[in-house]
Amino acid sequence: MTVNLEQNRISIHVTDVAGTTREIAGDIGTSLMEIIKVAGIDDIPAFCGGVCSCASCHVVIAPDFAGLLPAMSEDEADLLDGSAHRAEGSRLSCQVKASSELDGLCLTIAPQE
Image (cartoon, rainbow, N blue to C red; front, side, top):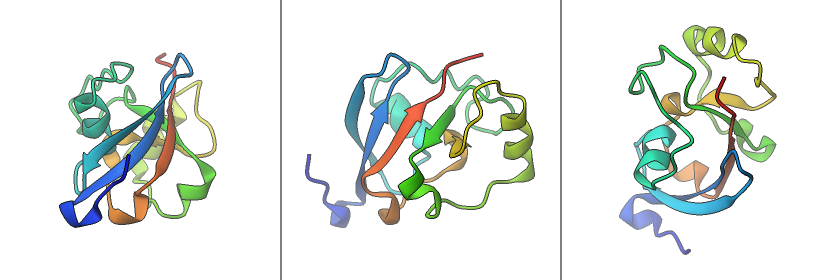
């Protein structure tokens, strides 16, 4: 898939909980959670709807992209602290907005608790 940043879209490589990797595209400014759900990947239930009050949209961002992400809020860190699957690169996908810098981003959806 070739992504045209002039059209305000980026490419994301998503590995689901079964280990299948898919390349999807999403609009810049949209949360990673929304992009994943619109693509039809059902491994993220997003119980709270993206307001950072649960951890059901937990993903692990590939190390190459970690430095490009916005800083994690205290609320996000607290929610991730409660996860048995927290790892280096863990983020709540509702808290990360797609940007041109994240084009080609690789992430893995964490298993649900």
